[in-house]
Amino acid sequence: MLRDKKSDLIRILNDESTWLAIALAAPSYLITLIGTEPILQGFFYLTYLIGLYFLNTNNNLKYFSKNFIIFCLLFFLSWFVPNIITFFSGRIESEFLSLPTLFYHIFIFFILIFWFRSWNLSQNDIIHRQNNFQNTLFVLISPLIILILIEAINLKLKFPNIRPDPFNYRHLTGEIILIFFLASLRLNSRALKLVAFLISLFILNIIENRSGLLAIFIGSILFFANKFIMKYEIKRFLILLASIILFTVFLYDYFLIILDYFFLIDSKARGLYSGMSQRLPIWIDAWNEFLRVPWTGVGFWVSPFPFVNGNLPEFNVHNSYLRILVENGAVLFIVILFTLIFTAFQIEKKQLLWHRCAFYSILIYYIFIPRHITLNPLSVLLYFVIIQSIFSRINHNIDSKKNK
View 1: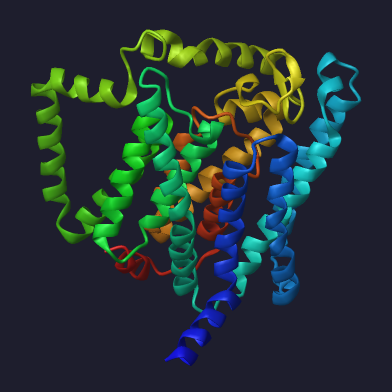
View 2: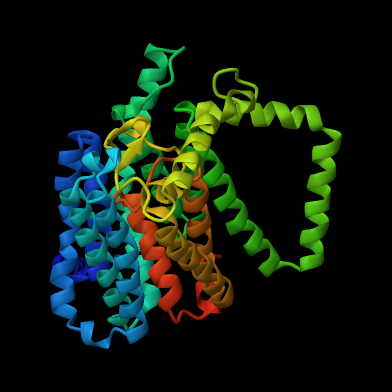
């Protein structure tokens, strides 16, 4: 028995999907527990270099298609060239553009993309490996979720009138919770899925992370609505949907109370009439800045409010898509938009249930979050979902059975 357990442990540690989960979980722990300074984060993201070992071991770079290589080259040029133009433009913002920061992100980003593509090529049992990756990720992230939960409750009890910020990095906290929730969707246990959902909902509500709440609600709807349609008939689903709409209309006031409880829509400081927590004026300013330099942008990781090196979240555009547009210009944005649309098409074509939930949940979350083509764990998970959705040959019936 002891020998069997030892053999199982060795097999798990030798599994590439286990190390993929470790690569995503490790920076989450390090940033949360040690520090959020940009230099520290850059150091912690070096855990992604684990991918270099597997790229060398798998030795299947030669099997990458020409279309994939051409697209990667196009993506690189649309990201790199506008920044070089900005750097040598002599404009005010060029002084704040850091080429080492740009080179670092490009280097790590493409290692991840090549690793994910190689991982997809080297798997004989892709369903089992993806399930192992997500189950391992859930197990690894769970202790951190418990720490965040304890810290959030402690802060709420000590300072009931102040918005809790566990470990002083609310954006990352929301991203870790979303990763935890998405990983739980591939578990076999319905009870564990429910517990993960309720814990995620509870923490996000305490820290008032409305983007995370919206992402989880959308992800849950996509996941369970799809299962309902598969298990029953489309007519029954439409009847249920109509009933919910009627219920909402007749109990409109109560529905608004529930919405306000979770999303603070009537809050003077953070509600709809506050300009989306003062985001709307910033979005307008960012759009005007984009119109000034539409093709090159103001530079990767350069904040236009005012022009500074955008390491601090409060100085960045709180909308990932608008941030890409204003920092890198229209060319990169169009390439990314094409990638997202093509990914959505592949998800529906292959009927990838979990990928659909993860893809749309993360995209919705980033509507209100100041990310870019960054290396934070949630963005890396998004890159993984995109690569697997485009290149996976998963049979949708198998994918669906796993999520019952």
